[in-house]
Image (cartoon, rainbow, N blue to C red; front, side):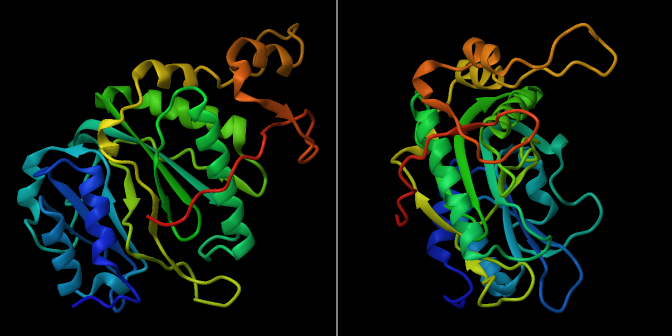
Length: 302
């Protein structure tokens, strides 16, 4: 039986059922398992079977539990079927094992020292930025994302339907959102566009460093989930429009006669007027930085 202080089977099952179609193969991976330096993993087609294996191996106390986001080749199921054990070489999901891209994942993470949990102020900054991004994209017709409080930051998940060769579109979207929204204290992670990307499993604890009053361990929790979330696809056109908002950067030494980057001109060309973009002196780099007007914070709770 799982310890409710360390693992929520209900949240985990709900999350897996949300991101994967019935009967689809997915990987569960555990890092930082107490008493072992090894990484553990297993492949499943049933969320209930995955949760049962996590409980059986007492992996609820692991530093991190993760699940694959995208559709994988069903053949990988035979690597370790319905059980979890230490990973050997080439037994974890690679980009080459993914057959379709199903999710655009935004990982909003507060800036802090590595391998420690976020403070309450840092955690709150991530929640507010997630709210800004969600509200602003909704003005461009984007559906509400699956939102997970990861424990240290926020994961925003939008359903897509793309071939793996189109991963560049997801990367372009991350770059655009990083340019438009990231700040020195909280940022959009640019490394979540690869096909074999893992997401922290909702219902599991996020343990980085020691559990302290100032930097506590927290459980990853679903905070927003619309009905039929997997069916509310972001279209390719929407992805392309967002990705086009990344400013181009000329290589050093090319077009030396070209003037400095004209922020106002770029905004006029690439950003819709109804996004309510404003210039705020949040900090003072060489040029003004684009920030989004504060919207309502995330509503916490299913």
